[in-house]
Image 1 (cartoon, rainbow, N blue to C red):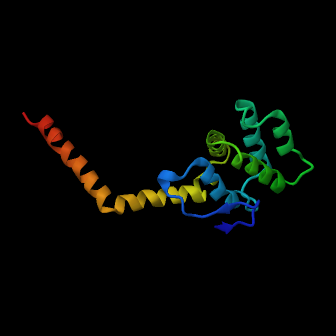
Image 2 (image 1 turned 60 degrees about the horizontal axis):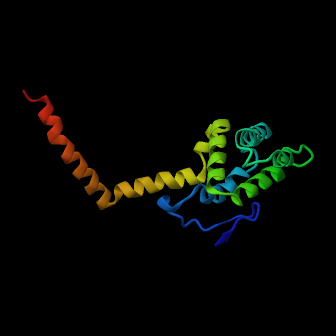
Image 3 (image 1 turned 90 degrees about the vertical axis):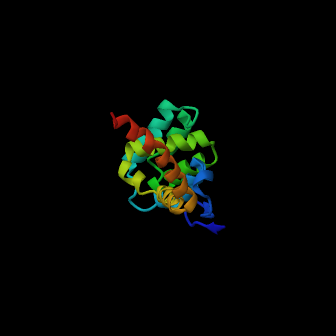
Length: 151
């Protein structure tokens, strides 16, 4: 396991697409999200408010106040928020990703875990099994399509 200097998060980098949970993705994406200037204070506040207002079971009022405390730096608040979410359940992490998508879509599209998922998709399509499966599906559809156009 390799230690990340950000928030004490560890990521092995070995989770494959079918096994990668939203919580796994959050651990993988935390160093990226913590990068200087990636998330603005406004974006973080909007994410916190969304999780608190729509999902108070994810972030209580007390938690939301703590993560929005203007006396703490944005980096500390974000680190605390991500740590809180990593200690919670899969649904909470999934809702964080939904809020991130809504409030920071360009950043969401550049997440390391999204690149891992996209690369996994390409690898699967390159394998002989996937190619054969797609070929079998296509050949099953082709006769029905040709038959529909004949008189």
